[in-house]
Length: 440
Ligand SMILES: NC(=O)N[C@@H](CC(=O)O)C(=O)O
Ligand SMILES: [Zn+2]
Ligand SMILES: [Zn+2]
Image 1 (cartoon, rainbow, N blue to C red):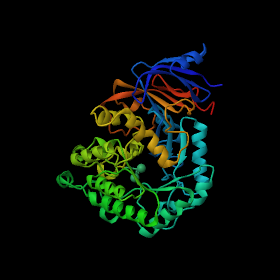
Image 2: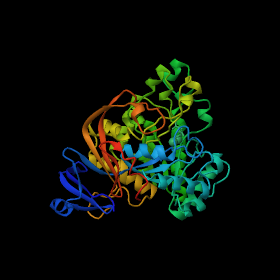
Image 3: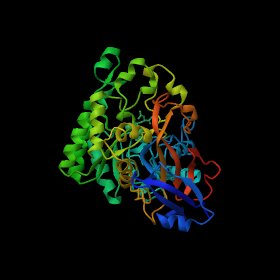
Image 4: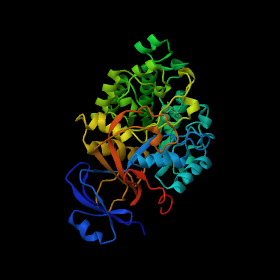
């Protein structure tokens, strides 16, 4: 039997404080019933001042296993996810070997289950080896034990329009979605950062906004043409927001994500030539940051996804041009959303629950996550202290990698506890190592 938890005076979705009892993997009672049913053996957590949200769901995580266990493993990455308040993550397909067969996605799914920190939903590659030449075994991955619903060549763009069309048509059979890394390859050859004033000054090859926008425009039209579901990864420009807004107004079945880093950081940061700030798509301008915030606030952008991209020191501690693209994000995502959207008055905690939990769960077709905080629902939850503040120190993080762009920054909010089916994976802000992998 798992421990029973009585959370006293917690504010579900930031609303009126109430007692909540977690027992037998579900939300067993709320209000006066919670205390009455708790009994003497329940562990009491004082929730005064804390916000209770459904456990966060990441649609875009790089766990690096198999192949780059020196940067992250399923175990370290999912422990970091739990520390960040997540209860489910989608593991991107750009592993070695590529997650392009039922065998590899099942391997990743099993590693996630055995680690026990969060539910791991592997993403399947769209094309064999992410080569962009022929479709991978999408149906076999969908029917495997891993039950893949999200397909992506992330890291690379499915740039061949015929392959993209076929993938969109194919995934309809099993209610799947194609998640596109929108990057026109010819327009971004040798690109190092956003193409604009700063890249011109620094003499670095630019990655123009149009390289993203042109692919998104094409893909929403393809999705409309074949009547399929499209998801756009890490949207980063004002123009991309406009295209998604237009597509949705036409009734096209498209969803879009923005990363925490694109909600706050700009291309100015490249001036120090610190590869911590090298990422794909690149950090854009202040006007783009404002546009993605506005798009998230008005629902044009559906979700925040971390694009947690751990890299080893060797791959990051080098000159800008030689460094890998990518930054970690699982343990800072909620704080960045609080700082940029909640503390600015642009979103409520209920909106946060939507963009970081219920909407990504729906897009990824993850049952049992992103559910309402209500009696009878699975106890996949996160308890947050919005009044806390902390300085980000990657050495204190659970991820194996230290490439956080928020290093040394003070951010608001702290994950106090995370629960996966009623079992605490994090308590007092610390991952519960002894309990992980015991009861599932
Ligand atoms: N975002 C990144 O800069 N890098 C990602 C790939 C990707 O998301 O495109 C990675 O796998 O390192
Ligand atoms: Zn990508
Ligand atoms: Zn990615």
